[in-house]
Length: 214
Image (cartoon, rainbow, N blue to C red; front, top):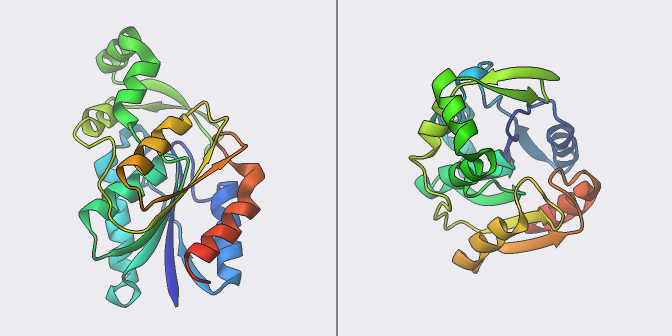
């Protein structure tokens, strides 16, 4: 039995449309899919390290018989998958990445600007729309402090397939292209889509199953 862990994106949840689509479609192909809630129910105190710990706990619960697993991640989930794979090469068999949020901390700093960053740091609160909760919620500055301790492009050596929209305005295609340049064995698919890739789910499913030799 093949095991896949799906890592949802920032301010999302296991109930997202993409998470449910791949749980159902991969399940039909005989793949066991786990979808952890990466904020642990505490979005305000979200950090990269905390999400990696939840991923580690998910793998521990699957047990050694499930290893190595395939990690599939969307946006921040793709970045997390690559960070974990780089640190645990024996536990991850392959990576399936959708619009992976490489360059996370520097990109956020550039997008928010120094004034907004300073206000966030001072107040320890940034208002963010959470798509899982469907409302605005607060995010603490610990996310940024913690994210700055991680590399922009994790050196994961596992086989990887990347799907990225040419019209992505959240994580520009250039970030996936840079990862592919650093990892020439990675398979990069440039799709005429946006960050969500909702209109490309069937394409992603079929090529992911081929990538997994299923």
